[in-house]
Length: 354
Ligand code: MRU
Image 1 (cartoon, rainbow, N blue to C red):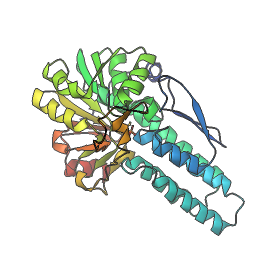
Image 2: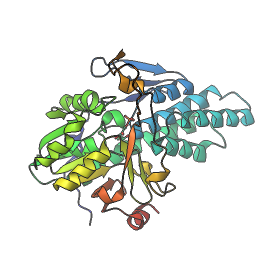
Image 3: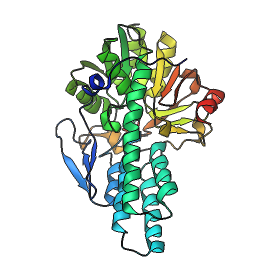
Image 4: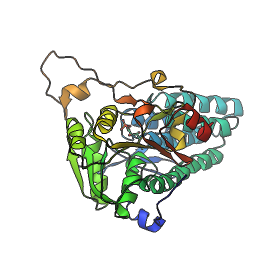
């Protein structure tokens, strides 16, 4: 049975002030997430290539946000090709889609958004139609987050301690956030006593982005080193690990930011529960299980250096996978806007998404 927390949208919106992207028809403005929280610089993207590079470089990041950015990138491509004959226009649009699709490999929202635009507008990429579809993707993501926030927060008992990882907030989505949306709703409803955020090495999405978003909203957050997660859960004061996802497979396995797996293992060991919050655009029934996911590996310098300065011992090598896969068996509940799945498995996933 589905239970949603009663909380009106105006109250929730008070905790939803940050935006990662703005589209004005001719350009996509992106809040440069590499510089936050020290600087709030907006960068202007004028063509799909700039958008693709911004996704690769993590100017914009977070699974839903990169799907939305790619959708607006395709609007820019459609506008650039608007005067070409139809065959050339179509070919240019397809090429732009292929370029954007390659920007990052793990978050399926990127491919999902591109496929949706190709399916609806690929035959005739008329710019206004492409823009309408991109704006629909953006608006639907925001609506999904408001719904998931209420569904997920209904699981939180009064006085809960929660631990989140990476950044799943307004910066990672169209607004409010997925896991962070649940935390915002839980806080607004007075159900949360303490929020902990893992720093999320090496890119520090937790320390730089999640902590900033929560403090902007007046929600006190306590930062922990990633390695402190298990010890925090062992204290018994944290009832929920609440995270987002980059891809949820047909059997309920979840790819998310590196470090999620360790938290889910520790939560199970110490009697806490793991909640994964993600829109249906993150669910990929074509990926049977986690072994089929392409896990992005980024430049080892992200580990070997800190703020551009080498800190690791000279000569040492590094391995830098930036996502991991949490098996479905370690996930207590998946919250999506289409429904909530407790103890996920292939049959339950098929019922909701098949
Ligand atoms: O490398 P990132 O910052 O794009 O990774 C982001 C995450 O892993 C998030 O948890 C996930 O995309 C969900 S965002 C709502």
